[in-house]
Image 1 (tube, rainbow, N blue to C red):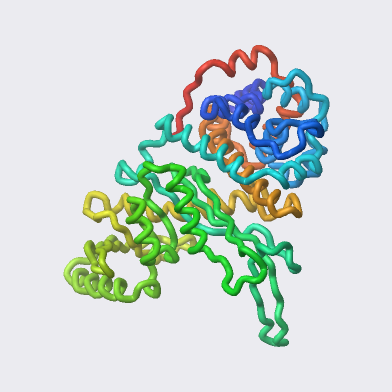
Image 2 (image 1 turned 90 degrees about the vertical axis):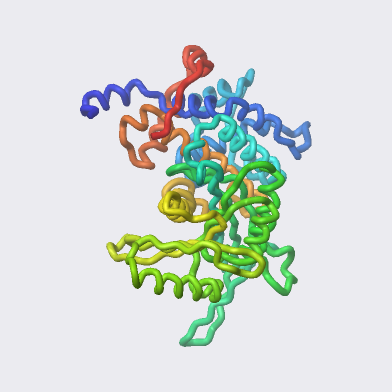
Length: 436
């Protein structure tokens, strides 16, 4: 147990910006070089800030919990901030940090694939370190959660790629049209952490299309990108009942992936009816809160279903059914249920955290659609480092803090304490990071 006095002393001694850099260097030693090597679309004669300065500044904005570009420019307008960025990036000189208009101009022309490549580098580094092997499903498959979420909503058309939804007022009959931007996310789940490994924006090709883009269409595009990027990665797709369908099953067969999805009665009635009939017959002899059936025939395949009675947040109980192509046994049934339930982490540790507690991803930092996408991808990059920092830093594991306190402490250190030569000598030394 840490006493209050010990906590005060540790707080005085700790440079949280330095702690952040230790984690970043440990897991992603070539991250800064990757930022520097981003293909710069700007005319070279007009460049004041390289891609590394702009992108690292944005990562720090997100890490510090600054939810607007203006707030970032105001908060970082200190000599200490400028000098810290100069030293971290190894620059000979840096007079100012870029203004938010400069950053948005850069992000408006940046090919989104450049940031996707950086995220891919980070995920591959994590997999190479073998720090999370114990979280594989059945000791083999990496759980990848798939889900979509809304990012921005407008009352007037924002661009030709907007999704459109019409709402009818039941009393007046008046129609209201909302224009939206959505994204489909693929997140690698390891314990209590979820890391973005792929993003596919759900968008219309033009405003004249007859049928809008949707989550399932986006899934096929996203799955193809993930397969091309992580060719031999053994994956188990974790999804809600939307993904319990033949097109997803077939795609998983094609890519040699497994699937474990929530299943509801209305999704495939023939499967559900057979499962319920077998359950009623079996449980008339033996009541069991966990029940499963293997090898239910569906089209040219066989699927496996399991049902578990779980307690909801309001203290009530509810039955949840999952469908999978992994053989269910007495030995692995509870583990598979736990893996199926981990899908909710994309809502809690993923979207909810990014919308309400950390980055305010529903706030449009730019009116340019390409810049909006790049802002979103920078959040996903930052969030990988942030989770490793908060779960892996020994000081943060010792001294319990709220999300806001963690961001505020890092910002304060960045603004008030310039890194020393001794700090950089310590950064070059290997460290051990344990996740418990």
